[in-house]
Length: 209
Ligand SMILES: [Mg+2]
Image 1 (cartoon, protein in one colour):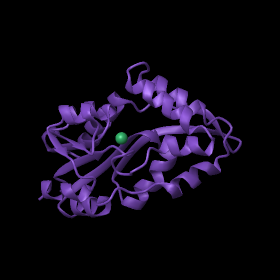
Image 2: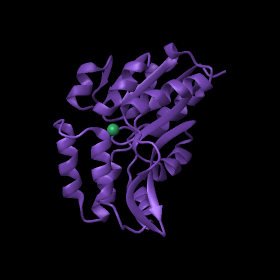
Image 3: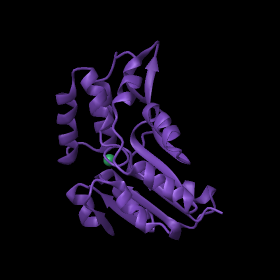
Image 4: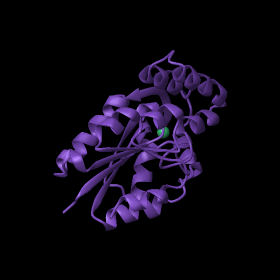
């Protein structure tokens, strides 16, 4: 019997990196992508627009950059201990990301995640198309994933927890029974029910008994 569901953001939550910036670095466009991210943070672009603009900078890169980027990502300290603990006490773990499924799928396998969802980078003839295939995973899609994964698992909404660091996580954090701001941006700290300042996910273990 699974008693509860914990859904994590990925970039700067389960991992220490922002995958889009690592990918852009491979294209020699990290500064360009960082400028778009900053525009989005100032409210000049919404998430879907900013994602499309950033993915466009990746157009033409060989598909092999995805694997090379996966090899570079750094897990957040404590992540394996936390996920193993949640499973040991009867919880399920999901990860939902405004990043990319080609990175999240092998990460989910490595961590033993029960659910995962992210954007799909377009690939054609071995090269990135610079487009996202399928639906954009934005803040509403993140919240909907939490609701859907709880429902298919027979877990009540009152037994859900969402953990994230960015503005894109606020909707799933308010949808969950408990929203946890982890190493978070100020706007997220201000709105979260619980704020964890230390950048070690094992700090969350006492929440789950
Ligand atoms: Mg994040």
